[in-house]
Amino acid sequence: MAGRRVVITGLGTFTALGPDLIRDFWQGLLAGRSGISYIDLFDTSPFRVRFGGQIHNFHPEAYIEPRLARRLDRYAQFALIAAMSALKDSGLEFVRTGDDQPGFYLPKEDPDRVGVVIGTGIGGLSEYEEQHSRLLKMGPDRISPFTIPKLMANAAAGQISIYLRLTGPNIAVATACASSAHAIGEAFRMIQRGEADVILAGGSEATITPMGLGGFIAARALSERNDAPQKASRPFDRDRDGFVLAEGAGVLILEEESRARRRGANIYAEILGYGATADAYNITAPHPDGAGAAKAMRQALQDGRINPDQVQYINAHGTSTPLGDAVETKAIKAVFGDHAYRLAVSSTKSMLGHTLGASGGIELIATALSIKHGVVHPTINYENPDPECDLDYVPNTAREMPVRYAISNSFGFGGHNACILLGAYTG
Image 1 (cartoon, one colour):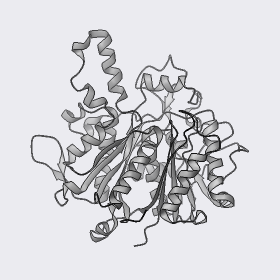
Image 2: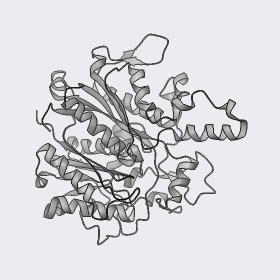
Image 3: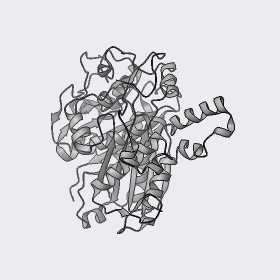
Image 4: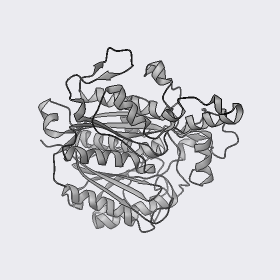
């Protein structure tokens, strides 16, 4: 799609590896550090799975004004923290509003030209569970008045726009594990079309709750390696047995290229293409031929006018499920042919677990950093090759290599597929 150029000028993450973008997230990924550990948010003894990508020792008041923090579900707290980190990283100036409502504003920006698009697979699950428990124990009169504003899936997007006084496009996206990739892709389109000049885009998730963990266990989606949690997420490995449930957030600052250049912004990468398709096959299983995933990758390449053999790296969806990883490998080979065997392919989820609706944003941040720094993080726990997964998955050790063009894949329950093509910014 022809239109204005869109670049990435700010990155913010909040994950099980820690709050800092470079010291915790990026250096952790390059070192092959696992963020998986035993869950202590609640008693997991009745559950068949007792570990995940939990953010431990989280005190929201360390990042957010206490009055506001109490009005946000954990997932929205993560989103706001990542958004403010991305904004700070972007170099866009923001100052306190000076009124009695917590928040900031961007004094040099037209608020009508700055938007927020945040994805989440589920939204405020912890708030829902807490208030449902109060309903059963104490009756309907004891339900909090903040219940609906905290649990709704658009709370994160709305709260970020309120906190920063942003009156441009404000949208929430819910397409399961593809949510934040779709959010970024749609934000990309808005800037291309001239509907906004800057958009905070990404996703957040906080589903390590009794219902979240129990539901995914019941769906038989999770690894049950309780004796070795840090070895449990093993994308593309022959002995993979399911994904690892995780939480966190990733938000990017997308900006129209010429204004980013005029203000001397640090540009990580350029968004060149976006593909979005449906499998129309099964609510939880991918199409066995990977048809929808392959079509999304082709759309992104065509959108960016890039040939398959120009791509060096794919940040895979790579969840560590027996079916999903094999199907994604099949889809990559369908799109790239013989060139598939020359691609570096790695999975961020091998270290972070699966952050569901936040994963696309977090993984696009990793992809942008690979382009910027010329190094690709590994897929850890890759020990036993699978004949069905026979590509170069950058096993266990980071690899220095020039990355001119890269793809980030995100696929979700419901058959949702999203693919984003990034390129090195060349001015």
